[in-house]
Image (cartoon, one colour):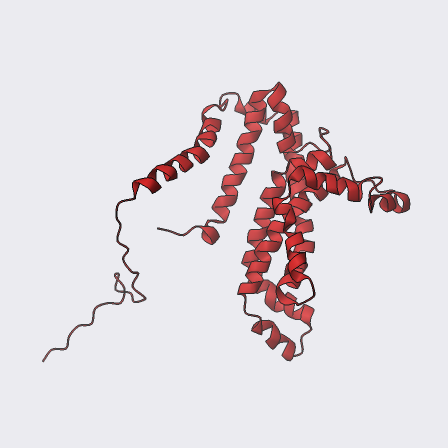
Length: 282
């Protein structure tokens, strides 16, 4: 008597769980029409930017001094703001995810407030805190002679203020998903809490830190409201690409389109870099 041949657990015969088949049916019209309208609403402006771009004159626009100054300042300030967010945001995310203290929910809400706060309001708040007559700024000016508003350092601070919450949220979520027993095992073996964090936790949450850093960098690169309010719009010193786009739109629309294409390319690159984290195959 011949033994029955067991069917393969995987369609390819290599083993593994079988993916359930999902019946594909027609899309209801009440869902199809609004979905297509939403897609058009989001994509048509981007396509219009590509269609109306001065492709022939684009090389000369991108090689102009003003564009390169804005591009260089944007890249440097966004990178510096991301570094500030990493140094301060990762420990803050660890505190929110791993420690218990009174008012932790309120602190989390306040930390994420810049996500929904209008950027101009954030710039005004920075002026009131770090300006020459600000709550902290007056002491910085009197004791150390440090003036932050309308300087390149002010650009970095404004961008870090609006970008850090993206990093904190990403890292905190990764920390909550990570098993804390690894840290506890390291501490029982004699490691200090900081050593356990440095040698055990950081490698575990490295993908979350990388994703948060990319998001923070992209947000810092596109910051406008807080930057122009706190740091001003001085070419070569505080004029980043979003500010240059706003200024060029009034005097040189082709230069504004060229700068907008750069920011669009950066945004697409960010989404492509995060596709494994956010996007799943059909």
